[in-house]
Length: 279
Image (cartoon, rainbow, N blue to C red):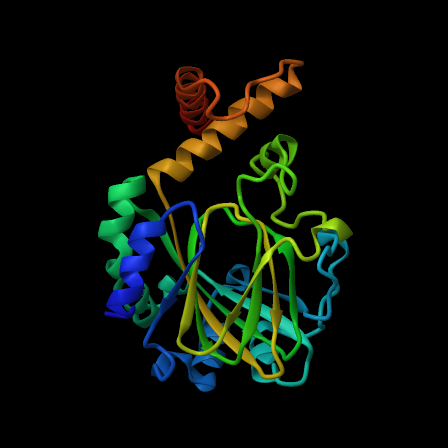
């Protein structure tokens, strides 16, 4: 078991809508030794590594993100002093890391299934960051548990359903082809997010599409994210796509939840359109 049983009880009580702090036991796991991470960066396909400078503003324009001029392997090897941020994606492509991912998700799968339906797209991501690096303000489409293994970071998270941070247009744009995870950050947001400090052994469940940004502490940080999609997250995504299509045609769809029957019809229509497009 990767997670402390008491923290799993807290997860069960607050999932899926609220952030939850957990505890894990992976801080001394050999797969997070730097030599293993360097080897993983070398072995993964090029498309499975995303990296750039970590010296970024909270509201970084994704089209202007500066690169660091290094390879993925060199970025990890020199992470202590290259002021960078790298994520090794889909670590389940490696058998050892796949086993670790399934062990972590196995702890939470029964509780997640009861609340949001069966897990799918079970994926793992390892973040390796230089001291002081910033991950800009953004949101993610998955249920996510971030597990801090080495170093510290402050995770500043905002409510996913608060339209003062994320209106309907932003939700719908996120689900369009080519939509980016980064979000505009405004000065008035300062002080309104919940700042959660993470040290080795700490973990945090972040709800689907909860806006957040991250600042690494004074040492190199290594974190593992275990993520999944659910029947509930899929339905929300389909609803936002359907609403965005309607809004583009000049309609004014109601806020999600205002008309459940209409929402279900919109989700069904989006699913049918997706299947037709794939075929």
